[in-house]
Amino acid sequence: MLFIGKYNDLTVQRSTSVGMYLRDVEGEEVLLPNQYLTDDIHLDATIRVFVYLDSEDRPVATTETPKIIRNQFAYLEVKDVSEYGAFLDWGLIKDLFVPFREQSVPMQAGEWYVVFLYLDQKSQRLIASSRVDRFLENERLTVQEGDEVDLLVYQQTDLGYNVIVNQYHKGLVYQNEVFRQLGPGDALKGYVKKIREENKLDISLQKSGYESIEPTGQDILNELKKSDGFLPLSDKTNPETIQRAFGISKKVFKKAIGGLYRAGLIRIEEDGIRLV
Image 1 (cartoon, rainbow, N blue to C red):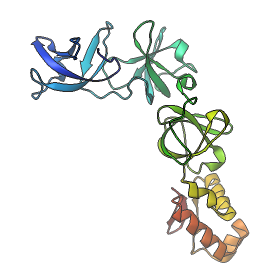
Image 2 (image 1 turned 90 degrees about the vertical axis):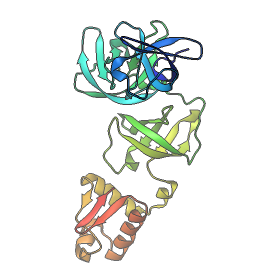
Image 3 (image 1 turned 60 degrees about the vertical axis):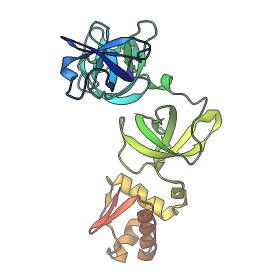
Image 4 (image 1 turned 120 degrees about the vertical axis):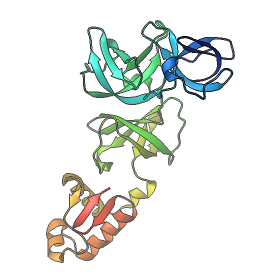
């Protein structure tokens, strides 16, 4: 059977005036329009295509790469809003539909949102939803403490940032552990710091060694965060200036920024230190 909203490996079966028809192992066919044909696509060749529904809800194949596939999350831009819902740019000719019922907040043209793509069982249509939480699963975890994971930020809260973990789980990065600018749509690496009750995931953006950073280093990180990621202080700064800024000696300051540098959290520049 054809997998709508996913990649399919299909065999070129026959050629027509509008394109080539591809067939799966069960004999189901789908059209690959002329605009996607290249010289290396010929009868009996097996090719990988993305299958979705055209404007008349018929399966159609494309060799283009969509920005999101079925059962995954992505950060997409709204191209238009109509009386029926919003339409997202997902890299294909036909825009991706988000009905009003699937919008966590009313979508606006030109704005970007984290959405999930699924196949609606009732209508058999591909639909996107910004109601992210209901598509995340923590009941059966596929990660352990210490694992490196892929993250997609989707929401800022009073505690910090809610993140999608490995396109499957919900996690939280605490505000006081974030030392860079973050926002919805940011994709980055992280680490499972702790698994709490009910399989809630605490996520860190640094490896476990980060917890060993001394209090002075933490104070410097906090001050960097408040200063847009840069402080005009370095190992060349005179001791009096460092004393006024942090109430510590230059020796303690140099030791602290050395630890932050080795942890990959800061960059030491000619005129100061900067968050990575």
